[in-house]
Length: 196
Image (cartoon, rainbow, N blue to C red):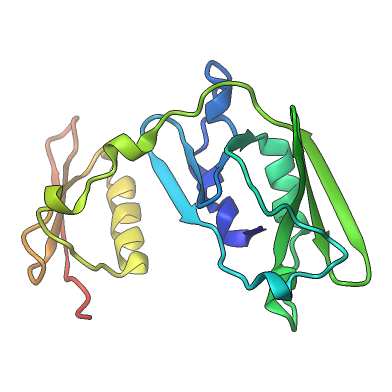
């Protein structure tokens, strides 16, 4: 079962067909993810009581690991309802997963729309190897996403293709710095962490 959040990783899927397995959505029993080799976004799959799933969709109990093509992912994402009185209807249900093909359905309990596509061949990279584990972490800092986005947009407008983020501790401001490579002007912003 996938909901709208499970398609967010497509924002970083590779547009380059040199490695086709990076052009789609990696679907596993626990999460969906995408990468372009420089960025990774991973979103866990929704937790739903199997008794809440409508019988009309007959979802698979055993889900495997595969790469969903971008076209199928976009169709599914677009087909998902934006609102429903029953949250279970905000999901796409995996119905078939045999050989080269995967099929999902989206339902409002009255109608069932099915979407199929050929899985992308190739081994998806094991990005788990590069995800820091608890022992590797220096500090956990909670930031306001909107404020961080606004600062990075301002940095982009400044004209620098890169920004240096310095984490100064869990209760001290994050420093975002950049320098214009042409005229040497500097950009500096601070973002206070959110207190939990």
